[in-house]
Amino acid sequence: SIIAYTYTVYNAQLDPATGQPKLSIQTKLYHNGQLVMDGKPQSARLDKQPDWTRLNDHGYMQLAPTMAPGDYNIQITITDLLAKGKSAVTSQSVDFEVIE
Image (tube, rainbow, N blue to C red):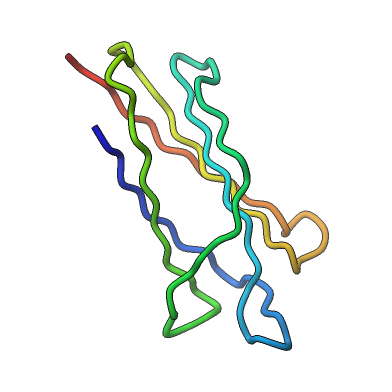
């Protein structure tokens, strides 16, 4: 199975040279609170946006056919490489269930 997810990033800092943000995205997958997949941070490849202060993006995660049924949590962490301080990193997660 494949999980599709979407997210919106608000008020990312824009590069003065390009007018676009520089973001890093990392996904993690947990099963019953235990980390089962730790994705490497990757540069965001954003499509052209109508409003660069409100970025809409998406991703996909392939689930292994051997995944045990149960409760899972996918966590998306966005790092704004142009921002400073606490506002440079944000994270959100969502729960889902794998059934037989």
